[in-house]
Length: 584
Image 1: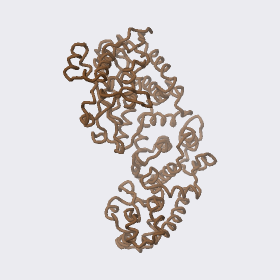
Image 2: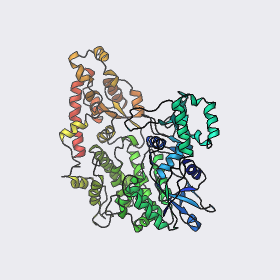
Image 3: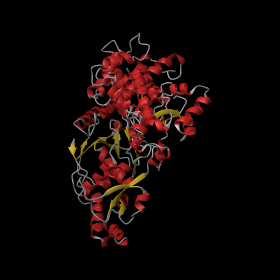
Image 4: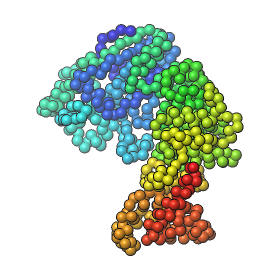
């Protein structure tokens, strides 16, 4: 391995574009935030070192004996993140990037591609409305001042609309690639009168020099055609800290050792399939699941993914992916969506159970599994409500796994285990900081949870376990309509002024105490109907007494709006008793 003559950014970009620079299968995917790319461009403009690179010259038969991928050009957060595999048969010798992929991809996206990230408060969906395409621009009017991160040059990914709001301020930096020679560059500056502003002139000149003249890509080149040596170098240089986490190392080993399947493609395919169901997971989730299923130590350690382990991963892949699929199908039937599924680690014991009992086929629909599904749903809701996977997740997963198995060195299910062991798990976690039982104080705090917070669905799902979540779309509905909790409405309803504070307190009107789960169609018909009239209408429709209707809906038979204080007090008592009964 030797140090080579440095090259310019332009030369590096041209090599990427012409597939002379490729990524080996052991490389992780691109994961830099847009702000980090913007910062990188500021650094190179200020002549800051961006560290050296490590390349591997791939020649002869080696070009066809390993998987390689193209650089990512048009990044779309959560949707277009996978590198395209390239067929290297017939391809001339090329260079594989062992260290520096994140930096080179950032330069490539900035100068040749695009970066789309989600707008704040928008749902994550692959549309221009929620995830607009952005290109990298440079502010050529004025420098940044007093930035906490020390930046001077303002590089920013902008949408077309954001650029057109102030086109004189911004320069799209991919234009600089056209101006390799100084003559054409000066003609361009004169044509646009960029020399009239000193900062503009100096900034664009600096950009042209940085991209085309300064040889700032310093790199070492490994020439030996030994895949194992290249993999070992890759792991050694990336195992020392933040640049590469253990899940990336695990992925690299799996990719290198699967024989019949392409590990990278299979794992990414599963991530995408789960995303298509509406849930966002990362490869870490899948790798951690495998460790839970088949490794005594479930921490992300390179030693936990020996070649033998990786081969076992491939052997079990179809069964593992099916268990993961069926678990997400199951929680969808429970009414969970990505936003109210507050811990995906809570799904791993369910995957473990389905996998080792080998009951994925038909588990979500067969009558024989009805009781099991009910127990699993209760387990999941309690685990989420108690936040038992918040910190120390590996320790908790190991403890829970020990409930399932009677053999510390192997991880099957006990032969006599025919139902999900929720009581055994509760017993196992007693005395730990993740105790699943709850006391009055904890319940009182749960009942203060607000409608749009992440735990509200789990709490309400515990309280209303018998709803048909599989076939219905259930909304969180205010019993007393939230629109009536305004001072004007309180006056109109003759509520004494000294009670205003209680009525207007969100812990009373917008919390679990004033919420129920209601089928979407029912909720739309209910609209702003007051509680008393709605209960009367529904009880008549169902041909039952109002008392029975209230009992079914966990509502105290105190329905007048002017009795809201008494209603809240009695409903609190009802819900406390119900939660204690369910959880403890």
